[in-house]
Structures are given as structure tokens and as C-alpha cells.
Image 1 (cartoon, rainbow, N blue to C red):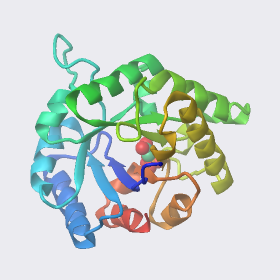
Image 2: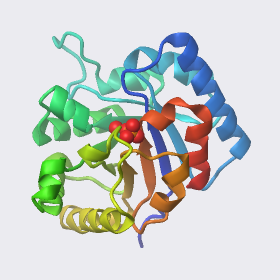
Image 3: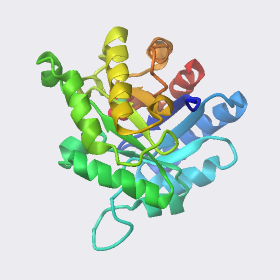
Length: 251
Ligand code: PGA
């Protein structure tokens, strides 16, 4: 029996937020989550590492989940400037994004690195959100599904289960651009992702597949209604509480 896929609405704050504004944003989102009292969806915010602890403390008891935007694969050691999954867990995180396209492009993260980070998340007891997605050139060359398949096969750790993996499909060209794929394009990508996961694990039917890339309040309902879309990974719109809560309500 497939595990029920509880929709997950995740906000990725990226490199945005100083303490005062970030805490106000987190508290406003937490208030909306508390008011929603939702049992049928999960809402997560992923602030910059400097704010994870303060945000986690500020929203404790509200039902709003807190995650990291990235982690190192190792638990500790001589890795100046890096943050381990254990440190995020210690700060109050329950989730961590790994392999975001900005990490892949800004920091040269390969599928193997992303996979090691996901394993690091497991070691610390965090749920990794593994990001994949094609560039515009890859889409225009008709390579989208092949790229997604290769990224999944390289980035998803062996031994993944529906309880230990979330995948986010984020077309690189849709991130921060206001552009989104058509709903049939999203459906095709998500169906292919689930099919490939089926080759990699036993309970692929239960894995949550998030769509990310220019999700906002006004298009969330349409995107979240697509088959095999089990939530959203939200960047820009996650920086405004009302906009982010509108997406959560649409789930
Ligand atoms: P966006 O970013 O919602 O601003 O397009 C999404 C993401 O990068 O996760």
C-alpha cells in the first residue's frame, strides 16, 4: 500500500533575511499555520543558516516546520564555513534542501555530492529535499526527461524510502523568472520522476514530489492540482507571509 502523500509546502528563503525581518516573517507564517490547524498538509520554512535557530525558537509549538537550505555531507571536521546536518538538527531543523540548482551552479555541486549530502541528512535525522531540474537549453534540446532521470539516479541515495526522501522538481529556467512550465509539462516531468524512482526504490508511490519555480498565490492551485504534484518549493513568494500562506491554503 502506498503511503499517503501529505502535501508539503516549503519556503526557501535563500540568502535573504536579517534577524528582525526574518523573525517577523516567520512569526506571521507561524500564526497562519496555527490558525489553519491543518492536519492534511505540512508547511516548512528554510531560512539562511544564521537564522535557523532563532526561527525555530520563534515558531515552536505552532506546527510550522523549519529546515536548512543546504548541508555538508560530513558531520564535522575541517570544512571552514560549512554547516553539517547535525548542526541544523541541533538548531531546531527537521528538513534540509540539498542539490538546489543554485548550489549546483554556484558551488559546482555534482549529483554525487548531492547524494552524499542527502545521506548526511539521514545520519542527522533530517528529511532531505533533493532538488533536480533541467536548464532551458536542455529543455529546448528535448532532453528534459533524460536530465531528470540522470539527476535522480545520481542524487537519490540507495535505501531511500517514502519516509526518508522528498524530491523537488525545479526547472532552472522557471526559478525566479515568473515563467512556469505548462501543467501538461509539469505532469509529464512528475510522472517520469515517479517512474524512475520506481526503479530505485520499493515505495516510490509514496514519495512526495514538489514542484518549484515561480510558484505564487495566484498559480498555486493550478500547479498543486497536477497529478503527482505533492507540494511546492517556493522561493520569492516565501518571503511574503500572506503570499506564502495563500500557497499553503491552496494545497
Ligand atoms: P522561486 O524560487 O519561487 O523564486 O522561483 C524557487 C526555488 O528556487 O526554490
